Length: 190
Image (cartoon, rainbow, N blue to C red):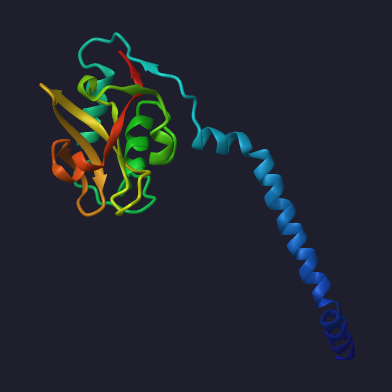
């Protein structure tokens, strides 16, 4: 019993140093993990910015396959930071679709807006990314991304994860999206 009381006194007096040592150990471990995994983190947030070329395989093109797969996810609910397969945010949706074809996109809509090459709106094709500004008034920065489903005579349809409706197809001509549209990015080579 006396040993227990003595231990309590020692620990009470030394508690500050024990807590400080634990903080140091945890901080060191986190830094070591960050240093050892920096290449993985960089690859996740900044994948190789090269344009992926389509294969000359029979039947459907890579663009057709991307769109067909994306359309199977219609109706999946929106969730902030959702990366799939059952819930998605907008950039999580595009990342997930592309990753199923071994193509890595950056993790956020802002980074996806810089990925690939600029594409003129009239020239967008299936699988190209459409970039939108944030819906918040007065905010003029990237806040949303979708993927082109079709471009028939300038009538562009795109699939995306909408905050209120989940994964849906919309028209770029819709006033809500037309007002926020910032541009298009080509990820796949022709």
